[in-house]
Amino acid sequence: MRIEKCYFCSGPVYPGHGVMFVRNDCKQFRFCRSKCHKNFKLKRNPRKTRWTKAFRKLNGKEMTVDKTLEFEKKRNRPVKYDRELINNTIVAMARVQKIKERRERTFYKNRMEGVKGMQKKQKLKEINQNLSLIRGPSALNKLQERIKNNAEKIEQLTTTKMQS
Image 1 (tube, rainbow, N blue to C red):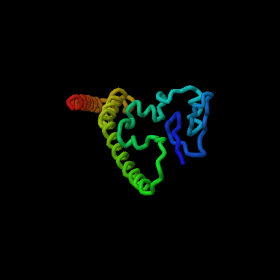
Image 2 (image 1 turned 135 degrees about the vertical axis):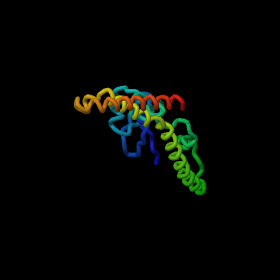
Image 3 (image 1 turned 180 degrees about the horizontal axis):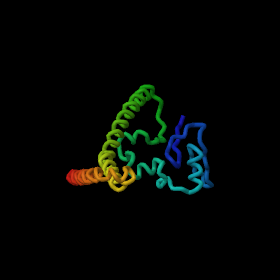
Image 4 (image 1 turned 90 degrees about the horizontal axis):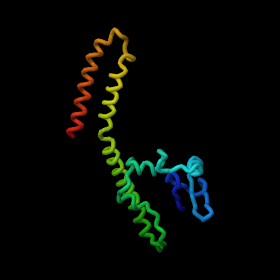
């Protein structure tokens, strides 16, 4: 059973599923769902469509260079059947999958390192700009002090970010 890749989104296309388009020059395009087929017919670029794997890899959202990805490559060399080789391959596949998951987790953590501080900073700025929407005019005096405190916190966050 061969699991093909969708031409547009790079997702898996299982046997009996999806659509295959064959061009006049005998080039085959497989699509996992009608969404991918329609986008292909509209001549959309998968690298510019945000939900595709091509976009995610191009913009650094997923791992692109890693030894674990080498195991998924398609090989067209026929290999003589050997029961021991098959068993070793299955064991290795499970081990490679665990390693790949661990590396993806660390990649995600490294990518999301400074995001929380940045989000907090943006929220504080938004509160300072739209303060009149939150409270009535009588409570503004107390909130003016909070604005000053928030401004100081924002400055501290930016200085700590610049230093690290």
